Length: 329
Image 1 (tube, one colour):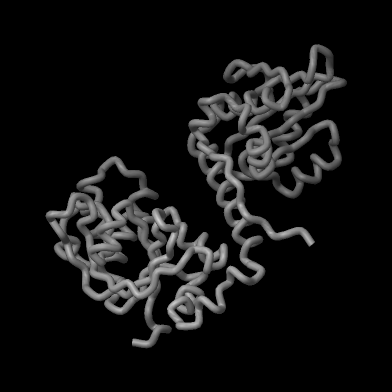
Image 2 (cartoon, one colour):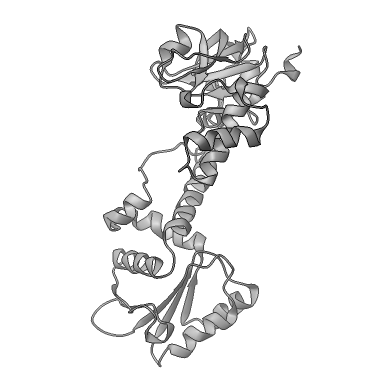
């Protein structure tokens, strides 16, 4: 089989000894049993999975079933596997040498295959983009974007050509991917956990971190005004309307906020979605009302995250980290 016909798979584990000392690759879900006893289609895999994990979310079921099915039926003998080990920060590249096996005596990682490790290469030999791809949150996944880089690592002259000695042009793209993935995560958590009045409470807390005094209106009251905010003890008053709907906000909806404002008031409209073109034009022509869409709301959350109420930080768990960015010219 030519290398071009071989697939490259990435895998993670907590049992490094099983992988590197016993020459195995493996995934969990021992409870499901021998995967070869399940008809070889994803629907039957899904049915079997739900028998053991009935409380799983739809997204979790799809992700886990996909990993189990690929590991059992899509991986072929001769395919390559990439395993980044944490203890020594090496990238281990091997070749799959057996079909799927079920080890009923395994403590956790019962779904197994044999592997022959071909090379153990320092992480510093790979581009930031390649490292980011094999840092996937999934336990088992296909390596696609940087497959050629991992294939080239098997060549004898790879160390001499190591990207560690060159300017890494994947840094910028990798940094942007990390940032965008973080923003996507925040917006999804907001959409999932904060609907209606709950989002109003959240926006009020966010405004508090920004230095505003806020009062949340009673549910269903105050003419559609959800939050009243002041920067200090004196006017102007800021009237805030919050919408958690998935569809874009229309011009007429913003006009209803304008109708509730008195002379000297300012308006703030906050949505998890966006605004229609007519609504955007209306906002541009009405400077006393500021519109914040989902993307802008996420930017504010990242800026003021440390000062949010703890219940919201538990809902949107984030960790401050440093990521590489392109060097300034």
